[in-house]
Picture 1 (cartoon, rainbow, N blue to C red):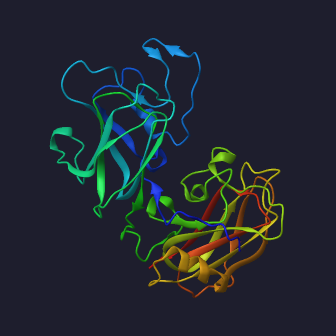
Picture 2 (picture 1 turned 135 degrees about the vertical axis):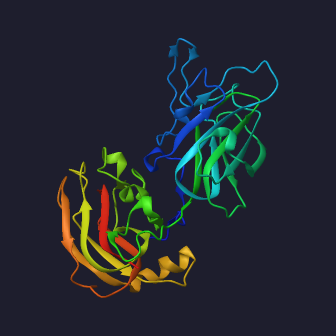
Length: 328
């Protein structure tokens, strides 16, 4: 196992559109659309590109404020969840970034702006030009809406809200995909995600392209690549789907799956260290180019699981992963 491990600790960006998150209100987005602030792609700069209102910027940018007050946007999260870390990205905004930012949150069934009651999530923080600003929050509450304030005006390229989706009890005792991002499954660690994030394989729908899957760098030594995901609690696993769609000259030669049920272990490092002894759920399964592979579970029919390790040999990319069983 590689000594270099990427620990995501089960946190995902709750602001990403594929979860259903939307901008439902903005005070102003004269220079650049507020919708761009939640784009999953890194912000880019297009030299010399202007539209009817001025310089085109990849992010949200309001006009220069000539009255009292400040600008803000309101997000409705596609999936309610708790937020642990924040990245306020001002990439390419230099001279037009806000002086300060703050974040508030609420939990509500209403989308009427006047009915939303806000509470502080992140107090006022200074911002710099062309920089990532990483903050940790102390809140344990579950939020449905987020208010992002900028003082007094300006532009922000991206807003990332890293947290966890609350697992639903509605799926209890039902057959379902235990590795669905939308239902609270998450990646806790991987050894490499150079070309595509490990989290992508849990996303809904078919991958749009290679960048929408998990892809590792080219391995130049012995070993293999891997990720570990925290699934829904499940048993009676009957079907496994592994898709290599879009991966044609860079798919893994084969893969294996290991699984375990660890209800008491909370630390990601402990989970990773224990994974070498997990039972095999799927062993030495041959993979091929640009294809949906369907496998039956013949090794752990009666076992309960909540963690799965995907091993790919020796490297490469897969676009989606599904595992069907009974949620317990």
